[in-house]
Amino acid sequence: MKKTVLISALGTALALSPLTILAQQPAINLPAQQCGTDEWLKHAIEKDASLKVKRDNLELLTEEFIANLESYKVEGGCTIYVIPTVIHKENTITTYDAATAQSIVDELTLYFRKRNPYITNVVTSIDPAFQSIVADVEVEFKLAQKDQYGQATQGVVNESAFNSWNNGNLTLPLYYEVFVVDNPPMPGASAIATMPGGGYTAPAVTTIYTGATLAHESGHWLNLYHTFGYTNAAGNPNNCFYDDYVSDTPPCVGGTSCYSTQANPINTCHNDTPDLNDNYQNFMDYRTGCQLMFTQGQKNRMVATLQTDPLRSKLWTSQNLSATGVSGLAIYPCDSLTTGQSAIVQKNSTIKVYPNPTVDGSFTITHVDYSDLLRVYNVFGQEVNAAITKQNNEARVQINTPGAYFVFINSRGKITNQKVIVGKE
Image 1 (cartoon, rainbow, N blue to C red):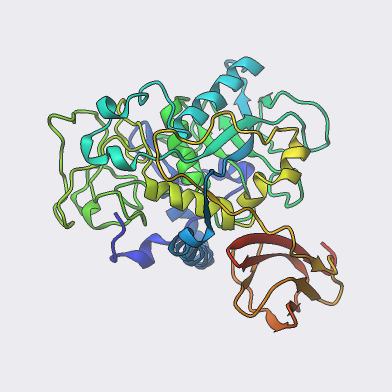
Image 2: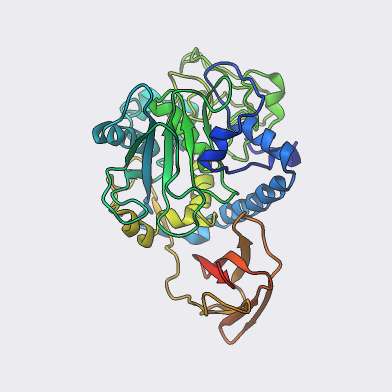
């Protein structure tokens, strides 16, 4: 549940490159088979305090998008986000063929589209308290059919030492990269994911592959915290006062066993009004064996990430889908179990940015007016103090420091993220 305590302590995370994750193992020991995302990020913050600023800036942008979500929707359809995906398998013990990799992304898609076999009947599968908010996240994962050089691939890589195809490369193509490893990247952790806010789209790292484990880590990758807050310590009574920045997930201490049932639900926290039961079937808890759902609030947060994060917003664009050889056609239709389905208004193709690249840091954005929201971010997700002047349906922007930037434009409910190069990239 979204609360107002400990926000400053919970707002920072780091998206690391795969090579960094595997090469720099911190002296952190976790209980076996737990997610290491939170502890890894806390360790990264201790090494670089500026990471908190990047995550805080992203959080403000996320909350702003969610607050205005209704104005971005149109009735009569839904937006399906297709994500090009690559499965990397450490091959010291076994390898993956194309069929195995395909089964992984197929199962992950079923979980995100509310179509996994354990939830086909929501009434009998989900605690009645949460049946109305089970979300079809409208995200689908498809194996890449082209590598970064445009050559044919099956979307699976078997390797003895991990190398990322894009590894922080900010040019197309971009992928969601999943690494299945034989040994954990930190002692005791069964999986780690990189959260938005840094300069990378990859990866999720898992030592034991299960569909629910990958759904959990993919939730982190799309900016979700554990339902019991910014911690990996499920079961701690203090978790009742931690925040996951989602409005419809009740506070809970979290758990590792699935001992709750519809007939005997549990309620581990009593600081919410009304006093709700735990959403113990949520993918972002640890309760192995009963992880079945994301909530509508979690969906909104993930959609906000896909629309506003400078890198993740590029993954599902037609240009990136073409570069990775992935079809943008949805596998499944809009959720038939949800009424009033709405689509996010697609990015505004009318808006143009020129010149791009710009040598002197000055560029123009067309087809905007005084009410449009314009913001400029660097590749680390930090908002840049750019000089912006609006006149005659155009905006003149001046950035004085060379580098790569992303211009976020909300023009009459249409969202555009445009990469701009100042000087030489």
